[in-house]
Image (cartoon, rainbow, N blue to C red; front, side, top):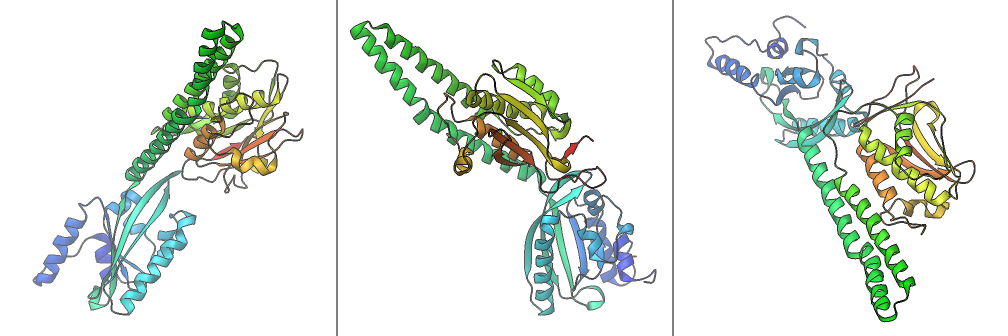
Length: 381
């Protein structure tokens, strides 16, 4: 392509003002576009070539306009693999509209991967019937909406937590409260001390439910960047804050995850409390790495959860009646979802419960990791 081609002039934003008023207008428009925060772009009608992008592109994509490939494929490489087909479909739809001479806008969203982070992008493409050299072209505007998406997610999480808190108050708390009131009335009538024991048990139950409710409601997403955290170290700290009786903790492998340490600790505390509550005083709890560095697991030697019940076990309120509140796995699931981890229940070698946390991408063959929206795993050799 020659140095004086329209594409080079547009890509560099160096259209010269001349006697032709159309050139003057173009130069002013390009100067204005370079001051915008949104990415402004123009491509050939078949998306075969990038004709123009403004400076905002460099900020968002991370490389200069001069480094852009003539092929759109280089532009697509930075898009999250799960979103590329949707972007290609939107491009094909817009190209078909231009070919048919239709003025049509196509809206689409996608995730952009850059520097181990994921940004949410909102885009609109539109037809330009009188483009470069009077040939049809496609223009578009792309903007970073990551903060908006995060706010919407936090709001949705808050609504869900408040719904669950309402469930606690209207159902879970009402039962032990009714028991306490009824047995207290019986004690007043009979002076039988066994009624007071029942009242004390009901109050303990109310306290446990209240504690779990407060933890669930306060489990908000952190805006702080996640950092490498050793799962074994956090598991030992969690172990020291739970009544583990005569149980034993075994850290099988060193596993490092990108995580919010406080939320990871909450996840492990609830799993440990579950394991000891279900498995008995002498249960063994193990923490280790999934094969290939694809994640980590926590398993126990207790009774486990029958396979037909595992799906319902992840729902709010599930309990096997060992005096748990049915909230532990809800909290665990919330932490996993916030980190982008896939959570699944399985059976340990002894027949106990095995809870696995992984990501479908897992580790790369060279020992590195494949980043996801919120985190990745890395198992030590």
